[in-house]
Image: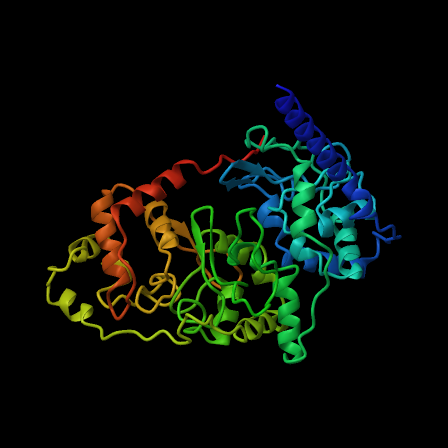
Length: 443
């Protein structure tokens, strides 16, 4: 009994110390950076508006059908749903009561004005490297040019005790330590600018870098490990590798990367899922110089040691078989019935309208999650100023799991593509992911 009592006292004392350290963390680990900002400076406001586009603030902080920056977008996590917050300058429900120090600490250090830590769904680990001048410009823009909206923030659905915020301070101590952008002298000026954008405000790693058990990004920049931007699954979407490797960007030119970021499509592929939102709210508004810098930098990222630098297609025997009416391969008849009208017998689709399936790196990627999800739930291309029309792909959830698995396996191994088979269990798992998609909060 005495041993049990002693153990309980040790555990309680340890928790008390852990809680005390966590509650004190904002004061010594992320001190307030007090500064005067002229929020009426037109040049500063315009700069802040551009930077807010680069940072893609609207994509997360605007729910479909909701007011701009008023929050309510539901974000799926393994533990429950997080809802983005109101970042309009409404004093009661938004950030209207934030001074610059409050704003800077939230954006770069992940600490709310009340001292509570933010969930790492907010990419402050990326924004941390951005300059004081850029954060001041963002503050001026949000405080002077964004319309205030009175909308309370929705509570997360994460159950207690996982919903307690104070342990996040320990997460920040381990994974969100202060850092600055590391200049790589081996890169030219354009690639340097691209690295700064990709690692910072554009926060590409938030989706495209794999995360560890604590949901931390395994690399925050190119560190030689090959982890940075090597691909990850988020909300059932596979955010592809952005390295110059076989399933990454080896088959892409810099011009194609720029065109994809600018318009959400190329002659071979189109953005869908979360990337469609990125293009619509962010990258289509970026300058040609910044898009070129990002593309130039991404093509500098070397292939991982185990990845071939160039993906080589096999001989195409599929086109002739389909044109001859040979449907002997599993999935061929289903492809002909449901897919061929748009994506054609040769798998090349229609440039800038129907994405090609032949030679499309999303199709033959190691992880077929995105291909499965867009086939089940459908998708849409982003609305941009660079193409007259946006297109929608219907979902095919009505097709039974085994049949759909055969069709997708056929697509992943036709027209020279070669990849692993899709199974009926893969389809069933994705149906569960889709069924648990969060409902956005729009009062």
